Image 1 (cartoon, rainbow, N blue to C red):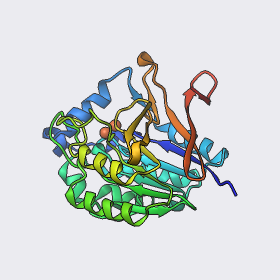
Image 2: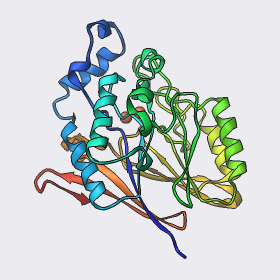
Image 3: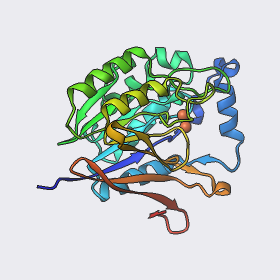
Image 4: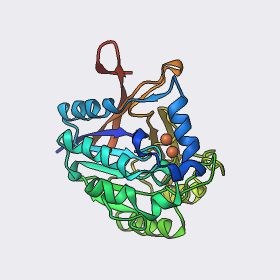
Length: 289
Ligand SMILES: [Fe+2]
Ligand SMILES: [Fe+2]
């Protein structure tokens, strides 16, 4: 019997909580992120869009929501708490949502040290700490593998890294689950050309090697703030689809970017098709792009 599944991909919420800023952060990387947030007149993350989007996703009855990082802007506990409250208020449970962290979720070493992402998101983070990746969830005939590429970086930097230990555990998982449909989610795109030292996935080549050797059926990522469709080589000449989606609650009319989500139809664990929906301020609805 054919099994169909509808997945929602949302990413890079950069959910801001303006009151979270602390004076002690004036000399940290948070000052540049905070000023950017306050004084960018055309680029606005609209917090009230999140509940609206989540309610719409519930209304169309998606089977699972995947959130690929940068849930918040400056890595404060209050920001994660607000995102968790929005998920709860929309009626979601941790069984229906999987989140992996992005570079903004560990904006400073202290955000990683205090484990704000894991403490405040609770079950939506799937695992309880930064060293617990990859996680594997069975979505009913399809495995979801979550990776963390989130590492703190310096001023002006936004790179990601998986690390040798995580890649080694991933290799074991891929070897053990051969033949089962599976998809991968992570924040930084694993595409060729996205390995740069300033904002790329530093060990993307290591991940691509595993994908080429073992294969998966789909990769979802964030970080780029644009809708992207690409591929990476898989086993026996196959091409693995790699999908990225623009920011979930961003209004950036000058660039034609509006809040968006990607819907993905899977048939028997394989990508059938995907489409992006975007918020239209005139109609107050989410429309296919
Ligand atoms: Fe981002
Ligand atoms: Fe990012």
